[in-house]
Length: 291
Image (cartoon, rainbow, N blue to C red):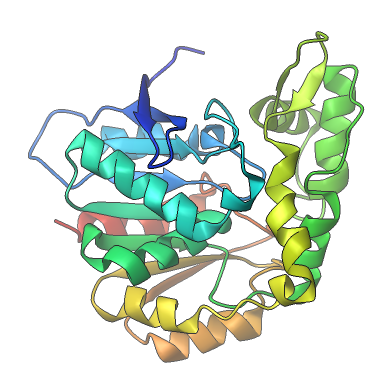
């Protein structure tokens, strides 16, 4: 597949070299760029389907590898693997790239980082698409993710890497074929020094989760969500069978933010890949209303 993005690097406040895929906007009137932020154990490749489409619609897209993931540096201090640090890294990207405001697209942890940005520098967020996460999360989903995050994995071949991602994600994507699982594996694994696929993130990203213990399973970010949704357009995307963003939490979010747009992606759990027809049918009209 032809690479459709440029490779951009920037420096975090504590000196890490971080990576982003930089998709150039199609010619046309200038529009605010989109900054896309992935989930806990993932990387910028998750936006490989939706980012080029957004770029073709006339918006530059910066899909980042959060510190410790993908082609970004691993942090010497694992306790910096927390949303407020991630948010400061995003602000450093914006400052170094000369971006004053952007539309944020955050999947799972990326949505939490967007909420953290609303708390520390709200003015940079022109609009937000929050993908399958809320200011509180269902304990079942978080426990499922915490159970495998940072755990050793033995995958000598791509077939075993595909089996691993299927084991942990089949509940969310029951319609996926063997080819889909192979593609999934190639997004979240890379070839390691021994020549076998290895997960493309620092296992130490789980250290702050383990250090926080039980309280990590019940974060309360409602004040941050309130600030995010109060002053700008927000679109909430939910997978119909999501075990992280429950129906009741989504309903509570909609009640707190009645102007927020909402779409549910049928037959999909945590988290929609945003290449689903229902997701695209909500995202592009939403973006069309943002200057």
